[in-house]
Image 1: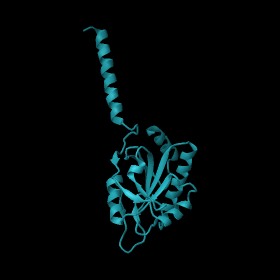
Image 2 (image 1 turned 30 degrees about the horizontal axis):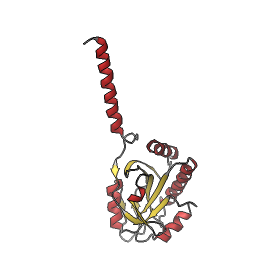
Image 3 (image 1 turned 180 degrees about the vertical axis):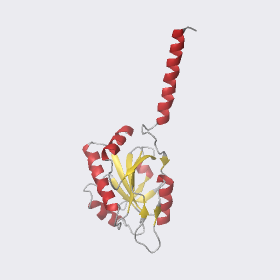
Image 4 (image 1 turned 120 degrees about the horizontal axis):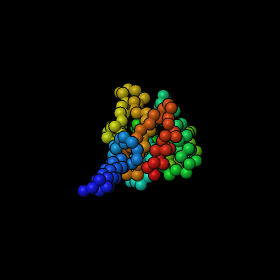
Length: 195
């Protein structure tokens, strides 16, 4: 085998290795979390059934909020509404999903009134309830590796304050701070990467 053949063989092996590396990246999101969202069937702010199947093939941003929250939820929901508007301006096809972490208090009507104080377009923003506190606690832990806890005798719920980027297959790829310094441009760029 001459030197030219060796170079060709090395180039071929490098190309093959690159193909494997790129295939392993999958989503194009570096260091993807790769959490699988567990199947769910809940109720949205309109009282309609809303399931994981409704999000199949769609990119979505998820968070956890509750209507009686006195601290982190108002800024999170304001940031979610701003992100929703920015995505719309850029004509990105993305859904927004807020899971109530106080489902025994948050009715669909309460969630709708709450959401309308942040956005005048709820066509792609789904606020969900219709489950028990133990159910959302397990769902949050299994799907998002997120803590949800309501101390006995308290009306405030402890929960994660992140926005989660979920791909078309229901895989959580990345999370972002939803309360302060929310990286809108980074989130929009990541949505574009996986669409």
